[in-house]
Length: 452
Image (tube, rainbow, N blue to C red; front, side, top):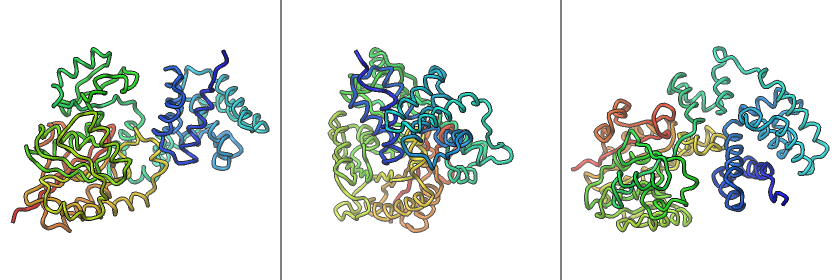
């Protein structure tokens, strides 16, 4: 029977949705895999790898194409540019695919998409690159470190410059390597359901590889499964997928039995449910977010995990809610940010985000903090966090907040961390860096409203 779908045509469609139409990569990939559910495991893995790999390496790929093409990448038609990009990724990073097959399939795809006149161009560029892969000229690292890092790790130059000025060359290269490494899924054991030991045994019976995480005992790294929905332990809420950095927010918040907690930007609800778990059935967590869709995500997770001491609410964090004034023992403000700490998971963010965008987000964060600080009762805590490694959104916002909120004081978070992380606390705050720490890039600070 003839093959119903062409994997490379699906890859082309997904990459065009992401690079031309602005669809988020994880959504575009998920949609195509759900639409073509009859694809076998090998085909699904191939599509996912080529799409994600092309996005991860796109700056380097464009640099290579521009060395061997008379027409520069930014002047090409989107379909041809995308065919070339995915083909060059396969030529350079997928040894299991013969060069001849990559070139031939790219030419066929160009013709199929109505570019018969450009078949020769596609063929010529790809075969020239394939022959000269070892002759590619890169910038010299010592003479031009910014360009070298940008091209070698496919990170925009403005980001490289920003991080070099803040963290130094050695740390930045560790970070950039970290973005490109494969990472296992990190999960949090729902302790109200079972102990971490019981969950580990259950997962292993389901054929899942389980490793301990060094930062928290109830955090685990899992791998070797096909998809989460196929695990009974996931379906009945035994665990939550959540990076260790996000788990540290609840640890640092340190809720006590009966506490009232407001999570102002909660979707999809991981931190809220973690706090509900730590409250051991007591208190109440108000998990809020802006849109009906995001509140729906929170409700789905509440339903799956079965927590009774949490409710989802649709509220705008920038708008003061009079009913919430001075009622919270803890406010969690994990705010919208540039996401530069999670580029390993959301690769396309590095092409969407701009320096101006990070500045706008820093202003939005301050706007939200000005509002939600009013929800903290005397003696209560405000935990501020982001999934970025941009100082303007992190430590600079902490300093601004303390300068403009005399009723609050910084609380040192060192006692809430394992020994390995305690040494990295600066000004009472924790900046986690990918490739340096065993986590996403993440920032956490804690403030305490003074008692009169």
